[in-house]
Each structure stands twice: as C-alpha cells, then as structure tokens.
Length: 284
Ligand SMILES: [Zn+2]
Image 1 (spheres, rainbow, N blue to C red):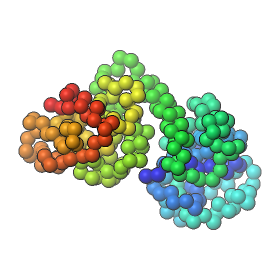
Image 2 (tube, rainbow, N blue to C red; image 1 turned 45 degrees about the vertical axis):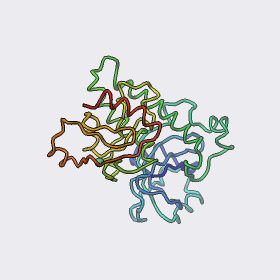
Image 3 (tube, rainbow, N blue to C red; image 1 turned 60 degrees about the vertical axis):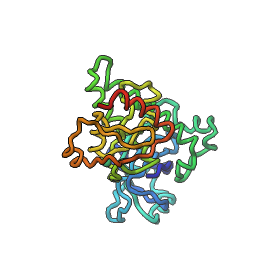
Image 4 (cartoon, helix red, strand yellow; image 1 turned 135 degrees about the vertical axis):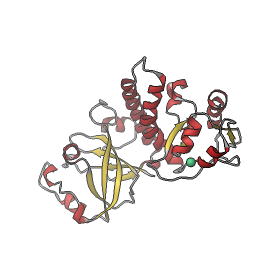
C-alpha cells in the first residue's frame, strides 16, 4: 500500500462531485493501485487537503468513466482535456472529509507556515517521500479520530461495548493504515487480504494512555482467527517473538485455528513493552 497526495484541478468542485456521485474517477500517470490511500488537495477557493480517499479501482476503462462535466466551475479547460489522455483511470472512494471540521489545519497557509509547501500544492506525490507532511496529516487525523471516538464512546460506556466500538473504528482506520505501511499480512499465518486483516492492539485500548492508543508499536496485523486468539489471551509472545499457547486451548482448536507451537513473529524493541503487558495481564 502506498499513500499519495493528489492535487485537484482548481475549477473542479470535488466536494459536490463526491456528494452527488459518491466517488471520483480520475486519470493519472502515476502508479496508483487499488488499496492505496490518496489524500486530495483542493485548489482555489478551498486551498486545503480536504479528503482522505481509498483507491477502489485502478483499471477503469474510458467507457466506465463518470461524466463530471457539470462539476467544473468554468467550462472544461485545456488542463481538464489533457486529463483525458492519462495512462490509466482510477476510482477514489472518500473515507474522511477533512474539510469541514478542522479550521485552518491542513490548509495551504498552514502547510506553507510549517515549511511543507511553497506557495502551491500541485500534481501527485508519494507521501512516504514527504515524511514531515505525512506525520502532520496523521497528527491532524488522529485528533479527528479521537474526537469522533470520544463522541461515540461517552464516559460511562461499559468497557466491553467501548472496546468493540474501538476495535471496529480504530482497528480499521489510521491505526491499521500505519501498520499496513510496514507489512501487509497476518504476522502469524501470512494472510494478505487487506479487507480481512485487523489491526489488533497488543495492550488493550482501555488500559492505554492516549499516546499508546494510536502508537503503531502497540499493534499487530492479524487475520480474524489469530486476532480472536490474541485478543482473548489464548496466545501471546515471548521476548523473542515465539508464540506461547495457553493450556486452555485444546489440540483440536489449535489445529482448526491454525496455530502451532513453532510459530514466531518479528518483535521490535518498541513492541516488547506492550507485549510484556499482554503476557502478564491478558494471557490466560
Ligand atoms: Zn493469521
């Protein structure tokens, strides 16, 4: 998976197009593939990174392209026409609208003030080549994510309910994206279907400080079966990354859940403190 920043043509009303059509079809000469994350920067008058989207198709034919001509503020310009000779066409599905809720954050003024842009943002770029900018976008997005979780999980929500909400929200959002940038498979069995992979907290959400909650080192990418075993404390890992299996798990379950005593995962130095917590508090 790759994370991109793509600039929209000034006269194209991205917001209305997304609102009415539900997605954006775009031509590109870059190697953007299904599963990639694409942040959209909108030109005048918005001048801001306004949407986080996911590329859901990377092989649209010209026939499949949606007609967006009504969303151009001025009649199709030459730049729009040149868009028509792109090497390929992609479909972007919005994940988060960053435009309305963040004040000046992610605006061109802020990007310039932070030294992350000159007087404009143009074209398409890989954000892994712009680590400062990616970090800034993540920080803003984290704030947004924490706010939305706080509103979903008001104080007093039973812990089990809160954990479930967090698992589906955070486990599928930015936290998962950070883990996917490092690896794209279940760290135990190697399953690679991104839609099935779960970003599992090593130290559970309810026990974390706010920094620990979205710290990628507190996460393992797991398939649903191995997430369930890890989450419920039937398996954990020692400091060398070797699996430790609970005596409560019988042989048949072990076989059916595809877990072997020889399994080993890679643990970074930063993973280890979280895993120590999991061993002592979660493992049964
Ligand atoms: Zn697995």
